[in-house]
Image (cartoon, rainbow over all chains, first blue to last red; front, side, top):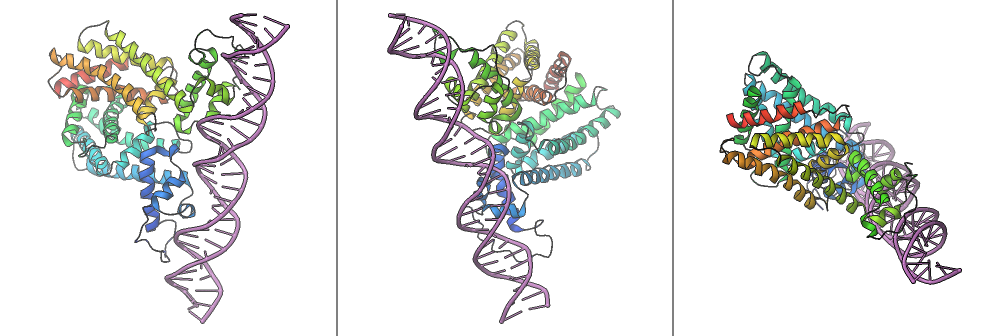
Length: 212
Length: 212
DNA sequence: ACGTCAGTATAACGATCGTTAGGTTATTGT
DNA sequence: ACAATAACCTAACGATCGTTATACTGACGT
């Protein structure tokens, strides 16, 4: 249906075919739309190829299958998010400012394309998916560890109390991720993931952590 | 496999057959196990009847089908949780104490049977399920409104600042639900949903809300 | 000019999906 | 004692699932 008109037959590539291709990117993008909408289990390969305007062998030419396609999508989006987070916290100093950067950057990243947080968080916080859980745990813990390192520095610097690092990190991630997940489900435009909300949440967490 | 040995052929009931039956409860319980483990979309009717040690017509005798069975399970668990929450907050006074009761009671309810929070929250925060979304939204908003009414009273009584009621409620629910969801996925025994954690989270929220 | 091969399509594979038609058994009211 | 019916079963329905064998097409190196 959404056939790519400008995507004619591909000219012979010099590089590995299964690694770079406009058609490949097109299928990935359509798969993101469907996976974000219905989740992995409820999405069929036929849904994806129908949205992309191609046939099954095209999907299986570029990807290992439904699972491989999904895993790549998930990994790409998680790692892109992580890179942006890492670069954003390197620009400011102090625990509070860095937590602020993390929240702001996450809100911005997820507002840019609501399909992304829907894919990431509905997969992470929904039912387990055999073959995905391991990789998802790895990707999720990279995020968690990034926040954890910032909070650990905050404790060391006396900005935060000497309570449990993991407990504080979990609380911050719960506030951030769940707000993103809940507010990404509404298809309100503009996004409710505003910088003001990010400010308020960081303040609430920080002041709460200090006083609790 | 898990055939109910003591569940012989049921004697004729006086009441409506599809409303009360040991076999019916047995199927419901087995369905809870499977749905909590794999989610709605990835669970097949055959998975459930295999776990219950019965055959398909038995399931369709007591329930309308996979969807009806799932909806009943979800509704029963949500409403039981809501009733316990309502009775628990009626025993204490003041916003802070009532929020504390809500958090404690939720932790207790979810620790008693980890299948329940897995079913409730992984369904609520995972991908949409056609035919379930509407009912789930209704059940979820009852929970939300209960917390909201407590917080609104807290604002009116001056216990909480005059910020957005919905914002505060969402933040509280994010902290509570996401902690339950994340910690329910680990199969640690004993549960990490301790009263100490509940105390700490309520303090963090309350002090944070005051200072932010 | 032509064989090669990357890229895409047709069509089908066996497996599994949710659901049900129809038969069997056991208990009940009469 | 016996018809009626609740409570199951065996078996199968058509639809859809993920995946693939096979064939075709057209741009490329030679």
